[in-house]
Amino acid sequence: MQTQTLFRFSRRLLLPALLGLGACNFLDVGPPPTQVVDTTVYSADASATAGVLGIYIGLTSRGTNVPGIANDAALSTFLGLEADELLYATTAFDEYRLNQVNPAGNGPSLLWSQAYTNIYQCNTAVAGLTASTTLTVSLKTQLLGEAKFLRAFNYFYLANLFGDVPLVLGTDYAANSTLGRTPKADVYAAVVTDLLDAQKSLAATYPVSNERTRVNQAAATALLARVYLYQQNWAAAETQASAVLGQTTLYTLPALNQVFLANSQEAIWQLRRAGTVSTNTAEGAYFVPSSLTVAPAATYQLTNTLYNAFGTPDNRRTTWTNSYAVAGTTYRYPFKYQQRIPTANAGAATEYSVVLRLAEQYLIRAEARIRQGKVADGLADLNVVRARAGAPALSTALGQADALLAVENERRLELFTEYGHRWFDLIRTGRVAAVLGAYKGTTWDANDNMWPIPATQLLANPALTQNPGY
Image (cartoon, rainbow, N blue to C red; front, side, top):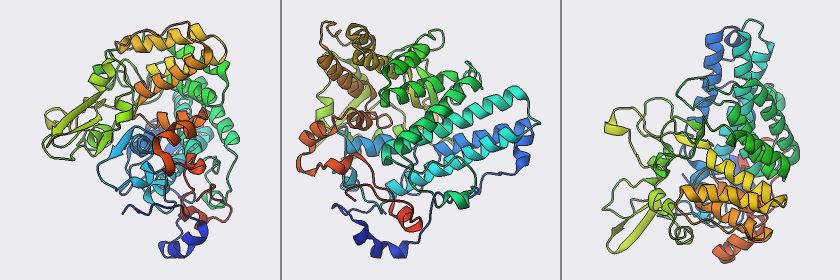
């Protein structure tokens, strides 16, 4: 059950309350019960492929009560509440809306545990694949690229949620369980290394034709462009984004109502929900109301500040948001994903969760160019995205400072409720206090820009320390 206490916690106050909760350390995950880690898994092509596919399944699985780090919309919902994108119909998630995340709550614990469980799977795959001498060479290379990409993906979000985190690259879970926090810069360096390796290992084509649910070389390049942007390596970010944008036969900007469809031409990487499909995507299940006649069926609602940020004209507001009215009150909600259940409930999903897409690469390159003083070129990239939305072009005469604010605004309008982009953007640019301080007033605190290390981890591993303010 979600803890509702809405004041800052200290470890001194938490310790007595948590002693009865046990000390499960999610770095000490051991072999997941559904994953065979015997070396025989990586001795044959079919079983090795199944082992790596299991990592993708782990990304789309759901933790108890709270979604997992990837496909079950945790990043989109919780971080949308943390920023200025979403409201929740009840007080159930006020700790996120008020930026007072509980270290003992489900959110930090389950996001942490899911990520490290997934990383353990990646480490097992990397070790098994590297040691194997019996796999088809091309398949071994591809699977290694996928495993390293997925490890980098998990660490990217861990570092941006929690700051310094343990960097676990091996499979000795007894040793891993006592690791301290690794500086965020070193975690980023490991992410870059994995993505560069993945670039070399992955093919330009997708492993399964007509599906974009497993990563290819462009996915590694796209995530690398984002990482370089976050590192303020502007030239490298521009180079990597340009490499993706140059693949015009594979990636295009389709109409707004086609962006989030399964195998969209804009999608660089999508996640398809595993197992029996009762919903197309977690986003659709969370955001699309179950009823348009009962309030508040739209449990996650768009803030007025986001809705009003769209200019006129801007087809993103009319296509990617929706509303309904009950008893004179209008409820607005995200509508990028429009299906709660598969078409005709036949089990064939028409929408996949889009993790990486082409528009972000235009926005990355725009910012990278502007930061290097190539303001007109950066604004040209912004105008490509705006043209697809039917929004008027920005003047290329803008100065650098105004152009950077235009990037911030365009990212807000284009990427809202997608994997926490708005929250991370405000933090990485140093704009979070100015924007959210004004929006949230007295509920904003300078330490709110990082999540707390889960309280269970602090109890289980004395080498870990808590983030300031908790």
